[in-house]
Amino acid sequence: MSEFETRAIHVAQDPDERTGGVIPPIYMTTTHKQDGVGNLRNGFEYNRAANPTRSALQEALASLEGGAFAFSFSSGMAAEDAIIRGVLKPGDHVILANDMYGGSYRLFAKVYKDWGIDFSVADLNNENELEAAFVDGKTKLVWIETPSNPLMTIFDIAKISATAHKHNAVTVVDNTFATPYLQRPLELGADIVFHSTTKYLGGHSDVLGGAVILNNEDLAKKIEFIQFAVGAVSSPFDSWLTHRSIKTLALRMDRHCFNAQSVANYLEAQTDLIEVVYYPGLENHPGHQIAARQMSGFGGMLSFKVKGGEATAKKVCSSLKLFTLAESLGGVESLVNYPAEMTHASANGTPLEVPRDVVRLSVGVEHISDILADLAQALEAL
Image (spheres, rainbow, N blue to C red):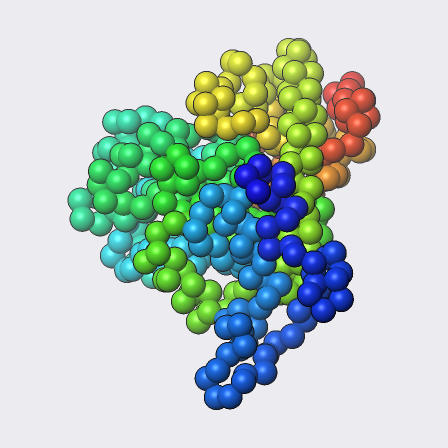
């Protein structure tokens, strides 16, 4: 099985040996019988250590990202936490991108800074600025998010990873927006890739989860130990739901990309109301060429800056009807978000503060005519 779509359906999904069920059962068990003390049956003993349903999901995630090891967590933040604990120790330093998810920034600023982890923010695409951000002997991690949340900045994974490796630092890529269908950071030189599987991998706004995928065995052992020792694992049912959803990932992402590109084109033409559209599929996007090189599609996320400021941006959010005003993203339904007071409120007053005239859209898989009609009526109300 070499093609992505085929692997998404069949990896770790053999029919049940006992019943022939085409879909393997959910192993809703917390513990497993041992065939004698210490003689584990197929390596399973306790759900926090391993569960057959979670193991199947992890095998599929590794296959799709092109990694040797994968670990499934109870949330995206739990996955990030495991990476930080696995790579860093007090006294270490991290370089963060100047556009990233507010919750990730909060983790460093409000949790790990007190633990002794220092960080600085830099434009990772600015070679001089990136070089200047390294602290000799202390910088151990470079945190990349591309496309970024919420301004859809595209960072050059291969170039940034090469620079980080020159300084003996590990690169981590948040691949949530792109998914492994559109972008595979490990193949571009990144050391670790992670996802909020809550988003596109889960894809239906009904399951919470996170994932870490990598090739380095030593790092993998550290992540695995933290997963076991701390215990923020995905439940069997959440693992099953996520694995089920991955089977349609390619189909959904194709529609997400088509719809988002159509929305971006439409909004870009509304020059009397929209100041700028942030979508890497637009040729005038600053990262378009990089995205075209390192991605196979431009994704389902976009943001735009309205003319008229905060009040106008909020009115757009409240006027949309098909788009649901809600946090999160990546589901089959279209969502609208006001980052400055929702997903990125924790970044206010920091270098990552989101302008208050920006609206973010997670473009769903509804018919494009209905999506565009909803945007048109909302803009007409301004």
